[in-house]
Image 1 (tube, rainbow, N blue to C red):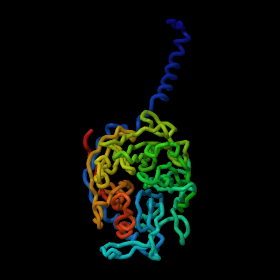
Image 2 (cartoon, rainbow, N blue to C red):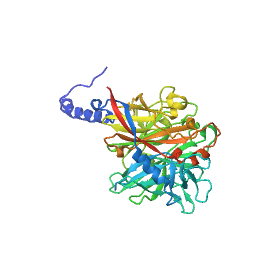
Image 3 (cartoon, rainbow, N blue to C red):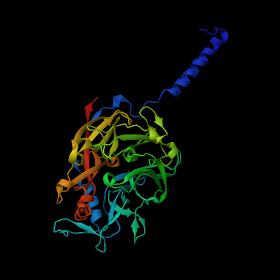
Image 4 (cartoon, rainbow, N blue to C red):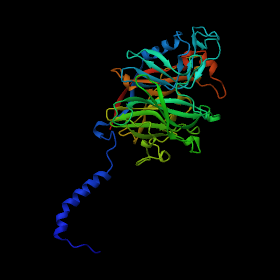
Length: 428
């Protein structure tokens, strides 16, 4: 092999070449993964829990108040975001707007029940917002439409279907801007039947709300999944959201009806650009890619592991903790118990499941079909008593059995409940 001769000029240029190579290496070597400081990352498990009656009862009192009959009396999909002025914005998916009557209900059971103000079927809208005061009191419901005909706060897409709000964040209107807005991630779903009775996944949108007025300014699509032929492989993002430095990590999941558990996916977005589709990058197992179609699971579902269609992620020191319904448990246990995974970086590897919580459910007239689902962390409410965790309850009877008579006949069956959860180390 021929080598060029070494000359005085070559020797003189060597230091410059080394500096250029060092600079190039600094560009090409990947930056450390967030949370990759192993010294501050240890395993986590669910150690203990207690009920949080104060928050549970705050929503129960608000729902039972008939001062207005066009506001929230129940809902699921419970998410929250703390606003700069100390208020908290709560985001709900399907929401009842109606009147609550004291017991006994029409079936003679000693439970409160709901109807519209005129005595008909309760209003069910696809989403709503509830504003909570800095002192922790829910104060008002935000909907769309008109007072005479309230509609969802986030309007249904023009082509059909609906939007369910998931996680939200306060961020700069644009990178570096002093003007802050609320960005809300929305699941866009289409009507379906059979295994898709709760809607066919279509894509993820992001809404922008003004501050402090919470006016809806815009809705923009960020992760369209409509071109994915198999609905079971479509990923909706926003079930969990964690800010880490100048980036926001957004977790999503699929929901295959033929599998006991779904898979978790991950995207990241620079702060201030959640509504900018071009800024989203998706983890493909080795790199961050702009193409959502190349995303790979960070936690793969299966018979022993996986996530529910809605899960939550928090930071505990240097450890990332994911809480989900224990869908891999199979049978009805998947809608009764909560379990945890942990990792030292948002893209994993994720370890677990570890620990289990079986939260209390309303007894109801048919307790075997009362389900718990959608565990969601609310870290802004963390106290010495632990992390605030909500979960939703519903009545899911045999296939083909309508839930409306059960849910409308017992208001406790469609309201969030709250726990205080403590995590404990499991070792390295």
